[in-house]
Length: 61
Figure 1 (cartoon, rainbow, N blue to C red):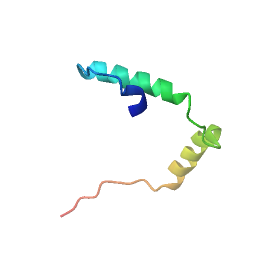
Figure 2: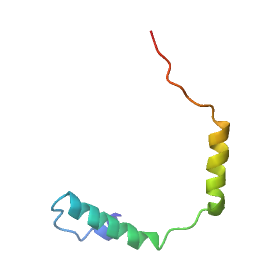
Figure 3: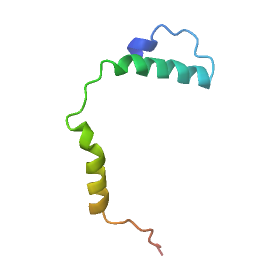
């Protein structure tokens, strides 16, 4: 992020900051590497959800 936003001199408001960060992420995204097995992530999430016990809220005295 710093590499892409280092020349920004005016961080005016919240929306302007979001635009600069979004722009920097779009530039950096081109250099990201894919995670092996990324196509099966939804299947992994479903299996983990099925295995994880439902966490309930317990009343503490």
